[in-house]
Image 1 (cartoon, rainbow, N blue to C red):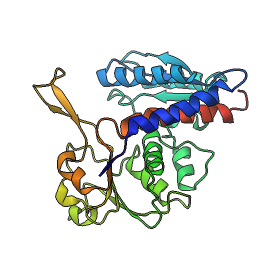
Image 2 (image 1 turned 30 degrees about the vertical axis):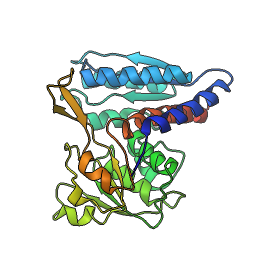
Image 3 (image 1 turned 135 degrees about the vertical axis):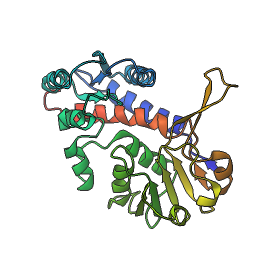
Length: 291
């Protein structure tokens, strides 16, 4: 069994971006990070993104509107960032407060600055295999993990467990593409799938993104499969200083011995998401006619 080290692969991508940014003349790439309220997880994620941007040489502009901001005022902030020629990418950290329509916010970000890859136009470009768009960061990170760990999807049965717009649907589209490293045969499973193990046991590559702690067990996995665990779940653990432990959507202890390759949690897909956000930001700067 080979452990796919997301920290190591993400570090390699960040080093490549650092070299690319160092060679740029004129204005450096810039990302605007918008965090609404003080959700502890969101605070941590935005700090990590700001730190990684600084490490690469990307300017990070932090915007911290209050948790009770109206949707109209949040739209106005996004509109100002859309119009600012010095901003290449915009990320609005999710989750947003319940009174905000998250999908409407994602659509409000200009497609050419949508480095999170959630705008309708960018998702459509993924479906059309148009490389001028931006791919959502977690699915893009999954594809990089597979490619850099030597897993070619051509001819493989890829089973995606989950159908979210953030992971499941876009990663299925990426695995289907007529491109090197892709060309997989894809099955998408979800909460409405009957006899789920009969599908997951067919997977040469299983991508688990269902958001349920340790849901995938050994009896659901084909021996020799490659397993990509996208889940980040907190389980109570009094022995930990934090009071919890992080686990994925896969029961690692029982599944790992069966696999040819598997990602750990933490340290698998998670670091890749930030690295791909930075890669998208550098790409946005490259495509910005006023850079």
